[in-house]
Length: 335
Image (cartoon, rainbow, N blue to C red; front, side):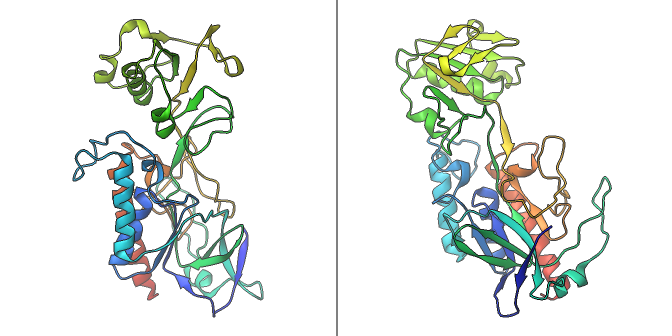
């Protein structure tokens, strides 16, 4: 694991939070309200994570009836500002490392906190010290703890998927959100790939937008019953299928558009300096009571940890858990 060099003159934050979606914002606001000093990073030019750019209604987020994803993102941004949280947008974190003194020795924090605490399921924690996050074009920033809230992205082929779901292949959209909403469907023949809720919801959406035909290709159907019941049986092709992206064809049939809903994968890009334990799906394993990862002093929250019911509310709850754990940790250490 790499070690960033530090001096005593550099300022140090209580928490370095990577990701300004619902989980990261919740954690940052709680820490600020608890009298601590977090700093919130996001590579995007906006707050809100996957909520931003989502024009669809979000009836699941209580207290905001009638709000869509963009409205939720706006509320998150206002909460950050109201709490006085230091926010660094368009700041991509490429690495997270431990800190070391200029002579190359571990910092005093690292020596004091070295201990073999174990997570449920076994495995010793790595030693903890202060941490440094860094990226291209900006100086490393130090903190006593790290909170990872980098979230997930739509799973798809290696098509150069953009942040909005657009791809390098015209006619193919990966994942739900703004790219789906901006597309015209009138008179188009549309293939939907996937058997989960997003696949069935978006099949109904494009049909309502005037698609000439909608065909769902699913090896297995996992969508909830209320969605399955709304989809005519003739729309569904269950079982193996073959896709030819360049020809926009599925099982030899040509389509005008292909929408891909293969679920989600964790965003682990900035973890180059951390050896975190991951679960079988590649998501970060954490302690259920503290949200702490296998690396002492590093927390992971939100969809990055594959919550049982991933949504805005469970992500925000995760942020609260991590904030209180960070507070307890720093108060124990007298930091």
